[in-house]
View 1 (cartoon, rainbow, N blue to C red):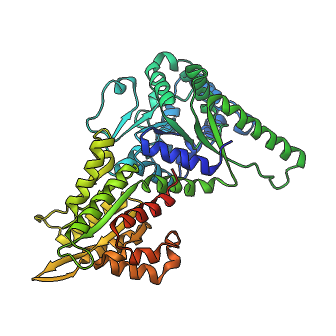
View 2: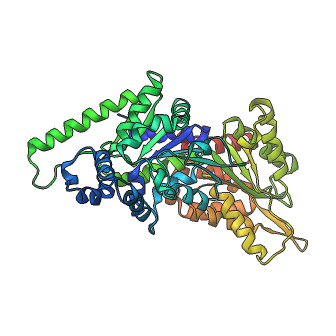
Length: 472
């Protein structure tokens, strides 16, 4: 078994480095109000005189129904009815689709994954047939492989025993694609009870395809609890059975995380997202005029070396190209990227210069607010330095930095205010210092953030704080 902490660390690393994948089962969609496999099959079983509670092979029920009716039209209609109804918010899907995961596999017929990916402004290539595997959507952000079909074409859904038996002949390219992903990516299996009849077929495919070459993948299990009225003997039996199932999954490279409740999954996924975002550092700052003890040379060297050191430590810098410091941040980042990062600029530097010309119906304030929110949402840590601007020949506090501080607080970002650089950063530091208990990660650092002006010591200090926050 794997611990939740190990999963968060390893999966966040997989997300950050681009080899994470998701395999979604029916349980993931149930949070949105969709039915599970047993409830989907129950009315079919009733129609042919079977009790779904007494049957273990639910796939066989759909086959018996098909045999009795001589057609699968009622099955198709059942799929269409169940998976096109209105749904409720599903936080787990929202998190998984916000993360920059490129590969999603699912046995579900519903459209929750692709819909939520679109809501998160991610262009999605949905694969439901073999023909669709042969073509790619340009500039896609994610691929959703619906290996058992789609609600929009229920006649082609994999649901009966015969469908599974001919799967290898009818859809061999899905197996090939799955094999490649299972070898090269780290999967999170989510929404599987591991009693779902679908999974028996999936696991056998994994084992046949990979042999002894499997890599670590992860899944969640809820600890067996003694039910009201359940005998001690039955409880012990169920615990032992779960333990054996968990050990058996290791044959497929699947490491189970044992939870007290499936409700814990949301916070675990939030920790994964936080771990990923902590690799992205937003630098907020502007400087129209140098203020003692800072002069042009010390500001240039500080901002240049700060960016250079962050990139050296494998962080991505997100910058709005602030007045007076934007260029040196870019120069410092690019210097390290060209020297040691194989010229992979996009992996380490995200520039978001503010629009200067406004047109259309959206006001500048509205546009900049939305722009700031989007930019800061992509980071886990916000560093505030300097912060003044010129208005009518007067040097004033950069109010845009104060707005960015408010947004960062609202979004729950880690905030590092370098008060010793003056300007808005100093005002932000004062606010943080007044409620220091809300910023426990700055304990032991506040005095230095307020007083240190030596550029080298300050770069080291900021990197030390950031390093302590890292999960991966």
